[in-house]
Length: 203
Image 1: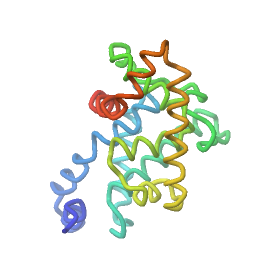
Image 2 (image 1 turned 180 degrees about the vertical axis):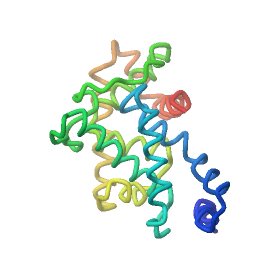
Image 3 (image 1 turned 180 degrees about the horizontal axis):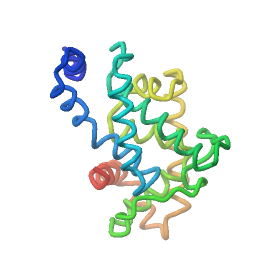
Image 4 (image 1 turned 60 degrees about the vertical axis):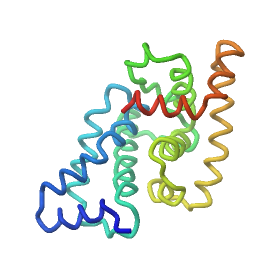
C-alpha cells in the first residue's frame, strides 16, 4: 500500500504547495503534543521552528523510512537545541535528566484536568527525556520501535528495551505521586484510558 505521506511529499517536491500544506497539517497536532508535555505554553515557537526547518530540508528526506519519523527527528533536534540554550550551552543529558529536573513548565491548562491525567503527566515529565519521548511516540502516535529508533537515532533493539524499562519507571513514579491507594489504582488500572484522555486533552 502506498504511503500517503510520501505521495504528498512527491507532489510537494514537484511544485504542489497545497500538497505540502496538507502534509504538514496532517502532523501538526502530533508535533504540538510533542512539545507541550516538555515545554508547556512555550511550545508554539518550537512547533513553528520544526515546520520551518522541515520545509527547508525536506529535499534531504530519501523516503527510506516514514515521513513522520523524519519530522519527529527534526522536532527532537529542535528540542535539544532549546534545552541547550536554556542551559546556556551546558550539556543536557536526555538519557538521565527529565524536563522536571530542568525546571521546564508543564501545560497550564492541566489545572482543570482529571486528577488521573495530572498524575500521568507528572509521572511522564519525571522520566528521562528520551524515555518520555519513547513512551509518548509509542502510545500517542502509535509509532513502531523501528520508527522511534529513526527519531532518536538508536538501534531498534535499544528502543524495545527502553520501552520496557520506561513503563516500569513510569509506574514507579505513579506510585510515588499518587495521593492515596485509590488514586494510584485508578490510574494504573485505567492506564490505557487515561493515556488516551491525556492525548485528547493535549491535542
